[in-house]
Structures are given as structure tokens and as C-alpha cells.
Length: 124
Picture 1 (cartoon, rainbow, N blue to C red):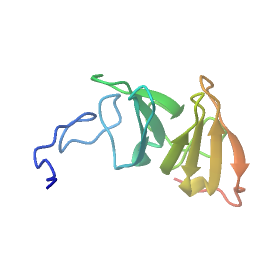
Picture 2 (cartoon, rainbow, N blue to C red; picture 1 turned 30 degrees about the horizontal axis):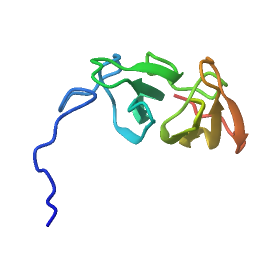
Picture 3 (cartoon, rainbow, N blue to C red; picture 1 turned 30 degrees about the vertical axis):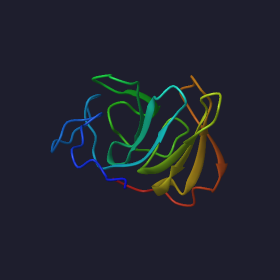
């Protein structure tokens, strides 16, 4: 008989604390683990995708703005909810409030829209 381990450990972020620094999240949503056991997290309310190598204490912003600001440009995200990583490290992002799917080539600082069109501007 198999049983679930009831004792979990935090592998990214700080328990019960949100923020936009590289070691914190604000309502994380989707995540992916690649073949090298690197964790990729859609940090929804920080409008970014964070990369967390195994045993790291901080994340690296690979899509969106590291300071947590949102926007509609090719270098911005607005409440990303999910993501996928391909075998070469390219990222596909469900950029929910921009109503689009963004493709971020591995190592680039901006994405390109591969599905969806922004039909209005959200004012903050």
C-alpha cells in the first residue's frame, strides 16, 4: 500500500510571505519541472515567470519584469497563469490578462505573441 508523505518542504519562496523580490512570490499558479530538475513558476501577481534551480535560495526572472510590474508590451506579462517549457528551454506562457499566449525563446528578454490579440488596454 502506498501512502502520501504528509510532511512537505518548501522548495521555493517563503511560507506565508508574499512580495516581489527574487525569493518571494505573489499568488503563484502554474509550474513546470524540466529534465534538470529546474522549477519554473508562473508568479501570477508579480507578472513574471521565475526559474528556480534545485537548492537555490532565490529565483531568476526569465519572462516579464523582475520588479513585478505588469504591462502589454512584448517584454511584459499581465497575470500569467500557466506555462510550458520545450526541450531547448523555450517558454510558452498563458498571459491571461493580456489575452494571449507568449513565446519566449530561451535567453531572450522579450516574447512574441503566438495566439490571441490584445483588444483593449487595462489602465492601472
